[in-house]
Image (cartoon, rainbow, N blue to C red; front, top):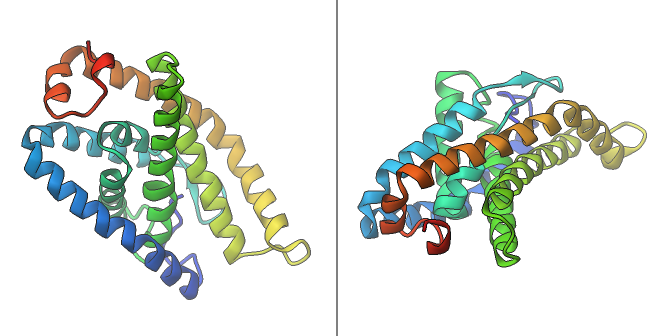
Length: 224
């Protein structure tokens, strides 16, 4: 992630595009409804998208044809939920492909699936699950962002292993190799993203708690 332009076989690129489409379509519907119901949330939505764009543009070369970087998905997912962040992640990846040659149009579906879909739903699941356990809010935010980042790269490893299985050990061997190489760069990046997301969230709670309360973006108990 991002898998570069033309790197995936055509059939795989099309399949990932088809798999991602329903999530993006329903996410667009949820985004439209959110903006109609809570127009005051637009500023925070833009900030979440900008956070995602900047972090996911900081690439560090990893496996040939791909790279490691933070994703920035966790912050927006915690505020707006996974469906809306699926759309925001798709927009971020599209602009990066067009403006920065980071990723690509043929691989957009695969990159959306790993970062915007898997990353968002993992972040949301971790957030909701740990909030139910009443863990400290900063710990919940850290783990949601860090595990979302790691889930993205595990998914990317699976996508690459499906496209380029090992001649001897097949998909399993290729998956182990891709994950091993990614882990060198991605584990420290995921931890760093977790800490940064906590910092940004605490700044938002300190300076924009009223706006978040009005837009119903976080549980009331963490905004008091």
